[in-house]
Amino acid sequence: MVLKASSLAPADTLQILREAFPWMTVWRDHRSYRTGVWRCVVDGSLENPDYTAYRPRTLDYHTDMSRYLRPPEFTVIRCVVPDPHGGDNLVLHVDDILRRLREIDRKDIVTTLAMPRPLLMDERHYNDGRVSIGSPVFAPLAVEGDPRQPCRIFDRHAAFKGSHLRLSPEHEAHFDEFIAECRNQTDLSVRVRLERGDVLAFSNWRIMHSRLECQGSGRVTEISMGNETELS
Image (cartoon, rainbow, N blue to C red; front, side, top):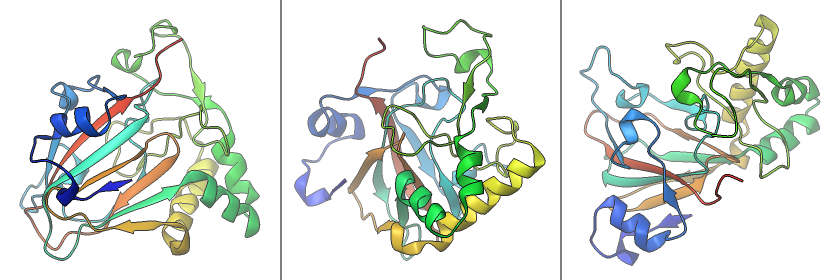
C-alpha cells in the first residue's frame, strides 16, 4: 500500500501511523526502534556504518528483524528526503517467487527455503513469552501460502553477526541463487518511487523488499514496524 503525501495531513511518522493504521501496535523490541521510529540517513562518506542501509548501494531483498522469534508483522517506510534519481523501493511477494521457482524447475531452492532449521538468537531475540529464553527454535526461511508463518529472508553477506538461521554450504548456495532469482524475475516485483512525505506499508511476513542504489548521500526515510495480532 502506498499513501501519497497529498492524502496525508502534515504530521510526524507516529501520528501518521495512529491515523492511517489505528489497528497496528508499534514494534519497539530492537534498540533502534525504542521510540517506534528508526531514521535511515544515506551517507556514502561513512566507512563503517552501523547499518548497511546507510550506504548508497543497492540493498538486496529481505524481510526485517528475521532473527527475532517473532518478527514484526508489518513494515512502514515514510520518505522524508527523496534521492534525486535513485533509491526506489521494490516489493515482492514470497508466494509469487516460490511459484516461479517451481515453474522454472528450481524445486531444490523451494525445498531449502521450506526446511526448518535452527534460529540463531541471542537472549534479546526471544520476544515471544510462549518460548523460554535459551530454548532451541527451528524455523524455515520461507513457506508458501501460509500467512501465519513469517518469512526470514536476510542479507547473509551483510549480516556481520553471522547468519540468522543455520545454513550448510549447499544451502548457502541455494539461498544466494534464490536472491539472484528475486532480482532476475523483475515482472513479479512492484517498483515504488517515494517522494517527500509518501508512505509505503506492507506485510513483513509475506513480502520481501529491497532498495535500488541511491545517486549519492542525503536520502532520508523513517521506518516503523508493528503488529496487528496479539500473542495467544
